[in-house]
Length: 212
Image (cartoon, rainbow, N blue to C red; front, side, top):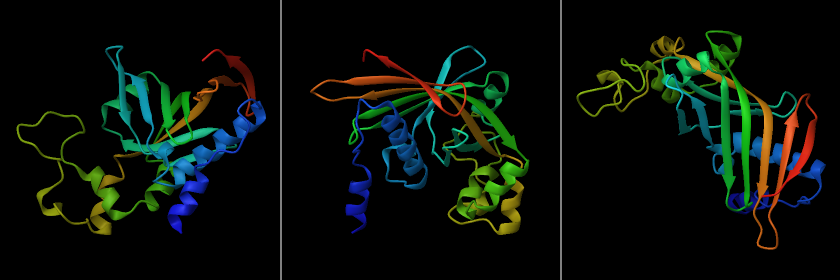
């Protein structure tokens, strides 16, 4: 039963030449991607510019999509290179692809770091103990190590921290809000591909068709 629901939710019924329907479909699937871990939009590629001026990309977990403010959120460690780099250059990009929908989204964003503020606190209180453990590492993310390890304290290997101990990780927990500036929508179809650019100066986009 659950499998049938998932397959139905992945089926796009909107017109691929109606700009308003395309925008509605984009918002629907980003919302599903944030809520449903089986949806292909749940784990997009996130890219930003590092201190050397190079592109860094990695998979992130989409935690929330706000269709009114047009923001995409994910969580990270405040000590991570991407958080440090986003402080210096907050231009960023998401890439989503769903092979069932045959849709790719390239989304240009402006990133905002929320650390030890009300936004971070609200999401931290919703975070499970096992997930909080990721922010208790003794070494910074991406730091070098002589041995293969994850940086988690030895006494927490294979188990959850207590609620009290987990609170030590709050200072590292960061909600990255990403304000959508532009969406490049691509639909792949043997009968004819379609590509549309949505530019956000306000909440309602301006549309521009593009040759795929």
